[in-house]
Each structure stands twice: as C-alpha cells, then as structure tokens.
Image (tube, rainbow, N blue to C red; front, side, top):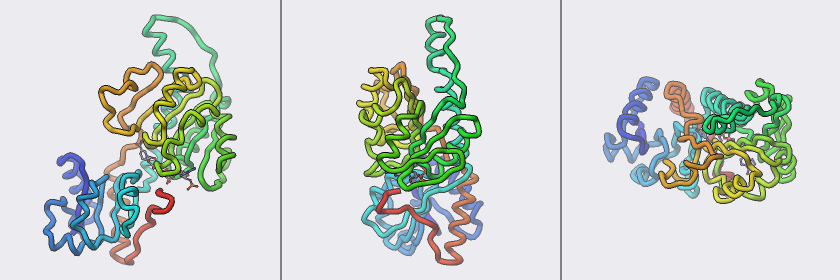
Length: 311
Ligand code: NAP
C-alpha cells in the first residue's frame, strides 16, 4: 500500500489516486485516511502533492517521498533535518509546458501587448517601433529542467537568449553565465528577465532593487518560479520609477493572491493564478510509476533533491 498525501480538494485527490492505481497495477495507492495505522508504520514511500508535514508524522519508517509537483520548496524546508529523501517530478512534458508559457508571455512583452491594451482602453491610435526578435535580449535566471527548455524554445523563435545558473553550463547558441559577476553581465543585457530559479535560502528576495537596477531602463520581468524570490515592495518601486516597464507574475508569497493586494489593479503588472506549468496527470503518473517500479525491483531511490543546496 502506498499513501497519496496532499492538501488538494478531495475530488482532485480521488482523480490522482485513480490515475496512479491505473499506472501502477501491482501496487495499491490509497488516500491517507484509508490506510490502517499498522500499514502506515511499515510504509517506505509515499506519493505527495505539497502535503502538510504533520500528515507525515505517523509514517515512522518512510525512506522517500515522490512528489507529483516539480517545485518542492515547502517540503525541503520542512524536511531539512529529516532523513526522508524527496524525489521531485522531472517531466519533459512539464518542461515543454513551461517553455510554451515562457514563449507566450515573452511574446506578450516583446510585442508590447500591455501597452496596446492600454491604448485601446483610451481609444488611442498610435503605432510604436517594432523590434525584431533577433534584437530582443532575454535573460533567464535558472538553467535547470525548465530554464533550459525555455531557453531552447525562445532561441527557436529567434530571440537572443542568455541564461544564468549556480554552476557553469554550456548550451549551443545561448550565452551562459554563472556566479555574481556572470549575473551582472547578463542583467545589463536583458530586455526581458525570466525567473525560473528554485526558492532557496540563496534565492529568497534575490530579485530586489539592486538586481533590478542592473537591468536596462524599461526592461520587463516574468516570474514563473516562486513569489519569495521577488522583493515585491522593491519591484513596485522600480515600476513606479519606470525602470521596469511591466512585470508578469504567476507566483506569489501567499496564494491565492489576496483580493486586497495592490498587485491586482496595478497598470503595469499582469497577475496570473499560478498557471504557467501545471503538472500533466498522465505523464506525471507514468514517471512516478517508472520510478516506483524501479525502486521495488532494485531498492534504488531515484535521484533526490539535494538537502544542502535546497533544490
Ligand atoms: P532545477 O532543474 O532544479 O533548476 C534550477 C536551476 O536554478 C539550475 O540551473 C540551478 O543551477 C539554478 N540555481 C539554483 N540556485 C541558484 C543560485 N543560488 N544561483 C544561481 N542559479 C541557481 O529546477 P526546475 O525544474 O527548472 O524548476 C525551477 C523552479 O520552477 C521550481 O523550483 C519551481 O519553484 C518552479 N516551478 C513553477 C511552476 C509554475 O507553474 N509556476 C511549475 C513548476 C516549477 P545549477 O544548474 O548550477 O544547479
């Protein structure tokens, strides 16, 4: 028996459990409340979707968790001192979904859609100069599973693409940077900055006034990673100064975004309800099934998240 542990609404949990059982016909995946206490004691692994850490306390012999989400920031904080390994979802379909979102919203900013939408509201007819994609420089913070797929997609669509990561990387026709100096170098050339970093102690509040000041005047930003990476008051200040002309935000410190948040009404912010890359049920179940089947045969826990780096 493998428990599915999450805080998702019950119908969604039922959908996941049914799909996982279909993908793993030799296992029995159950809702946490359907698992007898004695079984919980012997359980080595659980499938999770952002669970409340208190839901794990009865599972004294857990070795690892398989997350059906790619982002496991909350789990890494809660389990920092625990021996339980966390395996996150690495799914090429999810990476493509994110790459599509990065392309869509980069085009939105590149083709000045926020500006033309405002002009329409005031029945104002004005054409602005058009910049070729090959002259638009897009910098990506984070060159992991999602960052690399997004960089490739932007490149295919003719943009000038750069990327920054913790360790040095090489990518064909994409300028890559690492370290503090590399960040400065990339920022000063980024007309659009896309954030695809994980939220860790090193990236918390990284996008602040000091970082934003290094971008060219009137640049635009997209945050598809985690709300905590942006210092929101400082972003608002930079928008007010016009140093940043528009921000597309899909993720926030507290979700759902409070109805009282000033971000909703801000003329230069596009608010999205965390939709840039939703997990695909079918491909995720297939990947989870492969990993669990391999574990049953070999006893090998799939590559887990590094507890020291937090991602
Ligand atoms: P990943 O494969 O772990 O890649 C993370 C990238 O960030 C790596 O390139 C890593 O550098 C870089 N990085 C980490 N810490 C850094 C630091 N301190 N300085 C510079 N670079 C740093 O993660 P992923 O799968 O691409 O996912 C990224 C994030 O996207 C997730 O953590 C999650 O928060 C978010 N996400 C959002 C959605 C959504 O719908 N909005 C959906 C899925 C995921 P190295 O390559 O050197 O290790």
